[in-house]
Amino acid sequence: MKDRKILNIKTQAEDVLSNKTLSKYLLDALPFPAVIINKERVLIYANKKAEKIDVLTGTHCWDTFGKQASISENDKIKFHQKNEILAKEIKCTFCMANKALKTQIITKKVTKIGETLLEIFWIPIDENAFLHYGIEITEK
Image (cartoon, rainbow, N blue to C red; front, side, top):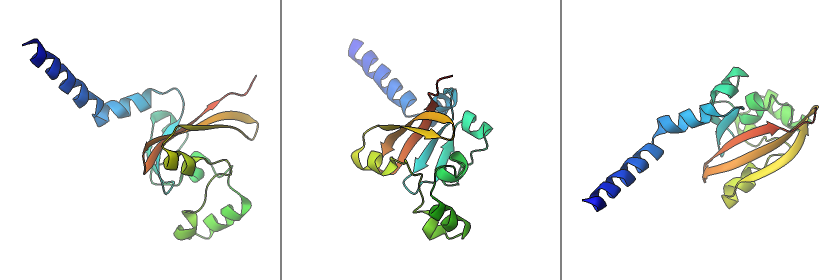
């Protein structure tokens, strides 16, 4: 009887942890903007904090999340040509997404965007997507 009870609890835990509603709730509870991005750098989920700063799913991360602040001038030209093939090649100058996806290891980097110092994270979910966010560490 005890073994069956433990097995039932484990099954319930697995059900809860695989529940997309729980995942969404946890991401929305983060105190900073966070997004899930696919390997083509398209936003597939934005938490509530990200939505408040006009981050849109279905757009490239460097466009609405990064506000094009960290892409090269050449990449800005590619983007404004409205060429989707070229747009897939665009990335922020500090981007570590390819490394994180290839190694499947959490990757982070400290970088300055404008006057803001950020610790930026790329957390692989699988080989096709990652959780991405930055925490401001600017001293005030």
